[in-house]
Amino acid sequence: MKEVIRTVVHEIQQVLTEVNDDQARQLSFYIEDANRIFVTGEGRSGLMGKAFAMRLMHGGYDVYVTGETITPNIEKGDLLIAISGSGSTTSICYFAKRAKESGACVSAITTNKHSKLAEISDHFLIVPAATKKRLPEEPDTIQPLGNQFDQSLHLLLDAIIIYTVKQSKTADHAKMTAKHANME
Image (cartoon, rainbow, N blue to C red):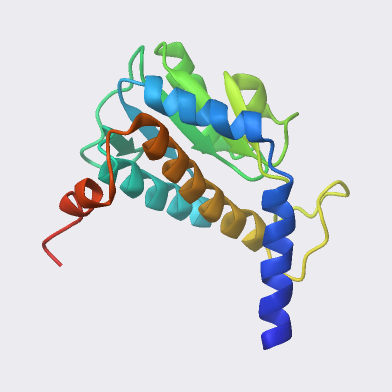
């Protein structure tokens, strides 16, 4: 078991080491510049997106997750963060297209800079991890399906929140704790 754990940690460390700093900083800039932030993703990637949205809320950002009953319309000045490992998830590409038509900025998080989602988007952040498709350009992994992408995504998005909040100086641990759920 320890060998499997060490291998998974090593794989994720390799992926995160190869993330382009400028792309990650640009996403932080878009977050700071947005009127409101919308996050979309499917499956486990969507769950990582929801965790990211929760931390954005803790950081004091006006944030929504697509598909929820309380999610309003997206407008000019808003940001859609669209997550798809392959960059070809039909629903995510549709949401990105609709957001662009509404005048919102779209930032894609994907493994494929040549994907349909990346082409639609104003900005992309490449996570150089394996997906369930196991394309030749993807790294080898012992992990099944899109685990390497989703796990790397979770840590990367947490790092982006830490960086963004630190740069903006609008929140600190105490302020974020005050926004944490109290009905649990």
